Each structure stands twice: as structure tokens, then as C-alpha cells.
Amino acid sequence: MASLIGLTGGIGAGKTTVAQVFNTLGIPVFNADDVAKELMQTSPVIKDQLIKTFGYKVYASNGILDKTYLAGIVFKDKYQLELLNAIVHPITIQAAMDWAATQTAPYVIKEAALIFESAAAEGLDAVIGVSAPLDLRIQRVMQRDACTKQEVEQRMQYQISDAIKLKLCDWVIENNDRDLVIPQVIKVNEAILAKMVASNG
View 1 (cartoon, rainbow, N blue to C red):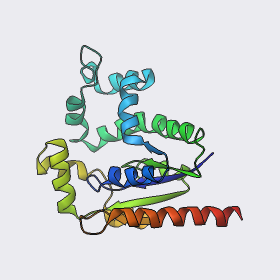
View 2 (cartoon, rainbow, N blue to C red):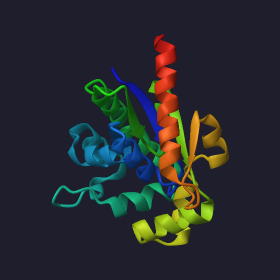
View 3 (cartoon, one colour):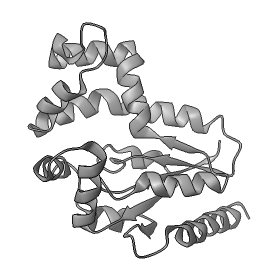
């Protein structure tokens, strides 16, 4: 199985931009957040548990997940968010492991916002953090999701702070609109490959 390297950062840090650069270098990327959303729509186990936990209104009459309804519950109550994560994360983590087992690249990237919060770090060989100033992160999310500053700050409350998260990472990439991202990614890619050669030597 290919080595599984985590890629994480706070909301709006720009993980996807960094992931795209790794992908351009030929490194496959598993976007855990996108896969989790897909599983919430397609996994019978997850759908059944979501309905039991949050009520039948969590899915519209056409069977599509009502993300606005669900967000209105989980982003106002930390306990409800933990219930949601307990349902979705284990199946998403397993999906990442299954995917990594099929890859032939020297290593693969698992992009996820809640790597440390969800205990997914245990199955990873290393973790890359993406950092950006708080005001820039808020601005990015407001533009991306067409939401208010208050809504972004509310969602940020449920992620561990950058000060803690980035200390847990093996490498940190600055995505602050000043430092160039591509040279940083190339440097980290070289460091990962060198580390793998050393460990296999």
C-alpha cells in the first residue's frame, strides 16, 4: 500500500489549492470531505443512522440530503456535531484506506479538515499542515460559501486552533497570498520522498 500522508488546515486555509499542486506532481489525492458528503448521500448505513439521529427531515422527499437543515443543527450544538462525526468519520476513514491500497504512487495525499479531531491521524505516515491568516481564511470562506462572517466564525469554533494543529504537523505550507505555494509543495514532496528512501534503506 502507498504511504498515506495527511493534508489538513483550518477552514479557508487553502488545502484544496495545495492538494491540486501535489496532484500536478503526480501524487494522487483523496478528498475526505468530498467523499464524506458523497457517502452521506449514497451509504445506506450512514443514511439510516442520520435519519435515526437527526430525524427524517435530514433528507428531502427526493432522497437528497438537506445540508442546510443538518448544518442548522450541528453547527449550533457541539454534541450534535460529534454525533454526526461519529456516524460519518469511521466509514470515510475506511474508504481512504481502501483507496490508498489500490494506488501505485510512492505516496498519496489524504486531504481532510478534521484529521486530528477525528482521530484519522493514527492511520497516517505523516501530516502536512496548511496555514493562512485568520482574516484571510474568513474572507475566503465568505466568498466561497456565500455566508456571513458570523457563520464562518461559528464553524471555526469546532476546529482545533491553528496554534495547536500546526504543531502536530510534520510540515507546514503557508498559503497567505504572499509566499508562493508551488515551491513550498515541491520542497515538501522532495522531503517526503527522501524520508521514504531513508526508511526503506
